[in-house]
Length: 381
Ligand code: V47
Ligand code: SF4
Image (tube, rainbow, N blue to C red):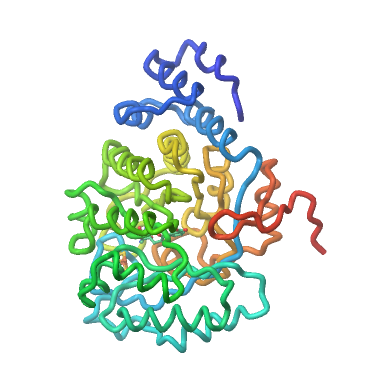
């Protein structure tokens, strides 16, 4: 896919404004907010792909990362009612949902005893019972059972609710959970940072400022996290760039983000089912612009459980260098929202094959991108 920079700059059909942006990207210069919007409005798929692939190649070379992970969703009942969410059941309909106890979650963790998973990703709805004491006990018990299993858990949505109830500051609460065994934060709950859109689709839960503040505090304590953006619903291109701009600015300050994960809005069985989903072309353009705009993010993740394995594989040519993990059919958030992956589960062999088909090196990583194994020459029996 890599086109030599001068070829794209010389192409007659490319506008002078886009050529100017291409020059900046090829020179390693940061693009501005307005240039980000121009890319969304005018950049063709091939133009954006060329720029994004150049940036990705410079950052990760031929490596594509994945991990061996599984999810735990402690509950799908929620005090909030985000209109894009197909997963949550309001407290008043709680008979339709599940609410796991600490011991039930530990039983799930124990099912992976002896298996080479490195990460458990824990997130779900927000309920009063799953409070500070609940997660403290859970993290401690997981670490007592399997100390090396990385706990990537909870988002500012849960933290804000839990710490407020416990009358703790964000600093106190995060320190407390870190001492209990929390290792890193996933990127969820970011949705879209623009206040008007956020109020419309995710009203009542933590604000943009609160989301950013919790990640900032976590980073300043010496820890790492991810960031997401829910796109392709009622937001504009300007809102997407605004979202990435705020993340880029925070990353300049803390350098604590590992991966940016664009999350495509899926419209099955939710209050926004009337909003059409965007095309795969738009998904790929969005990955590419994220790779170009977020010049200080080490990784762009194509989350195959949400977007489907084929699109995730294509995204590797549009800026993504990470496919998330094996997942083992342990998340319901996307299958309930209409993802093509109804039982998301990939073996290591299948992930490695997906990566090799695009001519890249499959690298198993741990959560913080330490290399576990290079599968370039692996032979599976
Ligand atoms: O915050 C919910 C999104 C997120 C829908 O950090 C939806 O490694 C689209 O954050 N259509 C949770 N998106 C998942 C998440 C995540 C996933 C994988 C890896 C990581 C990581 C983080 O899922 C929520 C929300 O933005 N979501 N419903 C929907 N209908
Ligand atoms: Fe609750 Fe999260 Fe669903 Fe919003 S997206 S309703 S906070 S589970």
